[in-house]
Image 1 (cartoon, one colour):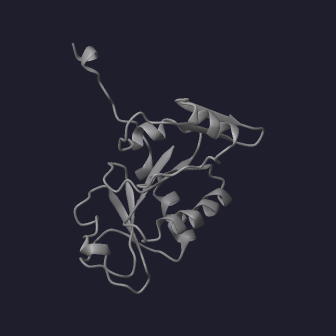
Image 2 (image 1 turned 90 degrees about the vertical axis):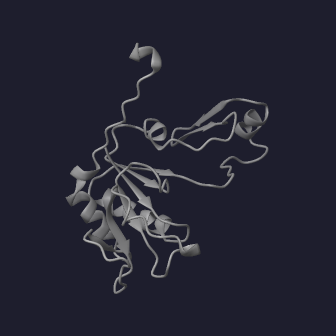
Length: 186
């Protein structure tokens, strides 16, 4: 599978871009999964429904399935930052692309999505210091500061972004990181 992280600050347009790239990749015969990082407490369940009631009763995991979809909800015993690699292995490994939204600090290859205005709070862009950034997605006609030799893709042309991903798919081949436990080291 190919994995690419769409990184950028809140409000940069990551969600909109991903939403537009997905159907372009699908039209080119690709199967696509998405992992979304959120900093907010969220709930996809409906209060009063059976799955919500099971979670409220203390279930660690609730898997709801029908003939058309499946969702797994897992309650974490304590707040912890999600590990993007642990999330990727939860997905169907037969997909062609995993589009990861957020996880600015991860070690995955990234497209940095920038707005046409300076980043909030004067935060600097990632691309000058993050070797994982493969290309910058930016508004046409806007200049990058600082300048870069990285490819600059047009924010308002999701087909061009998808085509660039497909043309450079070898950059995004996913290999899970090796993890050795102390027991194995001895």
